Length: 344
Image 1 (cartoon, one colour):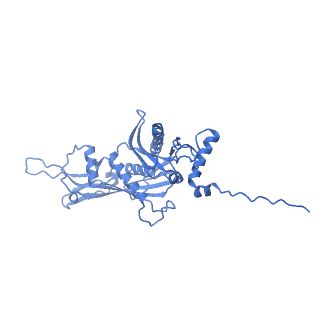
Image 2 (cartoon, rainbow, N blue to C red; image 1 turned 90 degrees about the horizontal axis):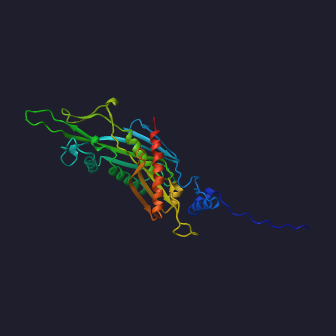
């Protein structure tokens, strides 16, 4: 009688996508360790990119026909649309006197714009852009944090020439021997609305790039004080509008800092993952964001801001220098995308 040997039960295996959802931390570390140890080359991330490799961005301006300025920015599966809407704020509705010197410098004008709240950004994530952000939900903590960071950078960067937000009026000459001084009758308030169509990591980088592109695309209508009506009147002629003056703008670059390997020494250097996706951001205990302005004429980069979140940071000074080097390269990529931008 023939005997049959019972076969061993099949091993339990999962496809990579399932493994990533069940245990994202070990999944990320397994990729970083196996790829570097087997070939000795730079580690390979689960998304197929090297640690220093970011997703190529694209920028389109003039996408919204009923906005004063707009832009659509995409980097991988992160896509965001930004629209700028200019509204008149009467000087009578603001505190203080408004007899300002016409030769006022940019810094004092920016301080006035900050005090009056003339730049109003708002980020909307409840658009179904990701499973964690369903439509119809109240603003999430992430959306409020991104909005606060965006407003802080707008106010400190002095990117917008706030003097262009003033609407002046010179009273007619009278019998008085002194000429009437020009006075500010109103201000332009810029409402910057940012909606995420799709979110797969590096939300701040994309939101800031969309803000820079939309503000650069903004045109303000010709406005003046009408004495007979006692109010501000705006021309509806597009030819009479003027572009919003924008100074040299920086670009943001975010890094994810992976957790230390359980089998390795806690102080062993960890690769910084530039332009992290959603899986990497959810897995890594900390992020580092650099805001840099690249000056290609002198081959230098100006550091505007360094932000760190989470409970992990760069391992040493050398790794921070590496982040600055990669950040400069990434800012150059954003700058090139800005140069090649298309207008709808």
